[in-house]
Image (tube, rainbow, N blue to C red; front, side, top):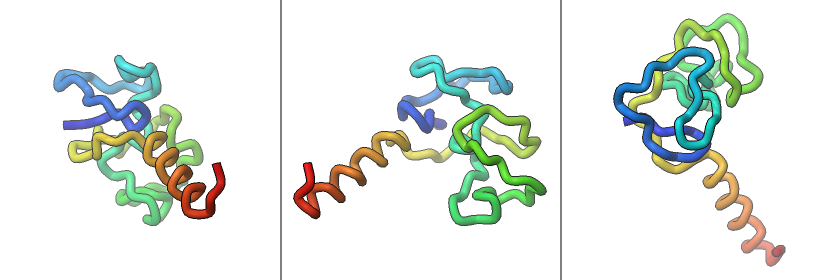
Length: 96
């Protein structure tokens, strides 16, 4: 099962991923680092593969030859987790 990094919804099992493929639910690009099986924050260029150049915009479609739609992604979206972290931080210090 693969999930969109942006909206957190599960991709259809028969989805074909090309550079121009968009999420059927939110319209964001699918062929992005954040949806890739090899995406690994903290690794060299945030990728477990031996890429020679960094992909700067991890949420934009790219031409990476190593891209493979991730099979074990969390169903929570990146945006939702960021909002939760921000909210928790603000609650910790009493900021609203």
